Image 1 (cartoon, rainbow, N blue to C red):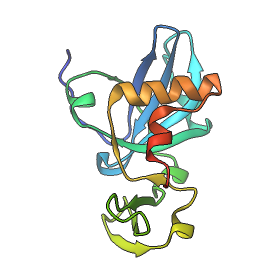
Image 2: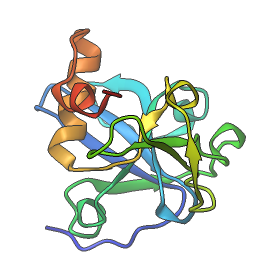
Image 3: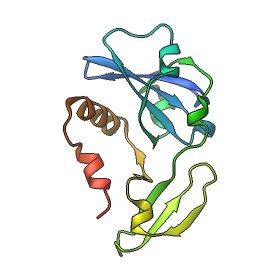
Length: 154
């Protein structure tokens, strides 16, 4: 595997079961990754199309996915204005499911919250490569994803 550094703005190429490629971008400080709603059967040479592509989701992934070259860095773009501030995430206490917190990935701050404030937010979690690839595949197949379902508010 290729050794790589986590570089802000880097574009990552993700092979989904040999069927198509999708792309993600390393966001500010490598603390989040934007996965674009764009797939192609042929590898991209230019990444400008990602500047206007919708985003499927923004999550954290384990560093070794990039540093060990599981997903290759294939380019770099400036981070779009709409991705400079990452969305809030929620944390639900596993021991007391009535306790919620908000996690701000931009500052690292965690504050007490309510279930209502957390509804519709992504769970604060770090994802494995295969779970992200499953999530993307399921998204395009229009079926529920087991990993997303497990992280939903209980």
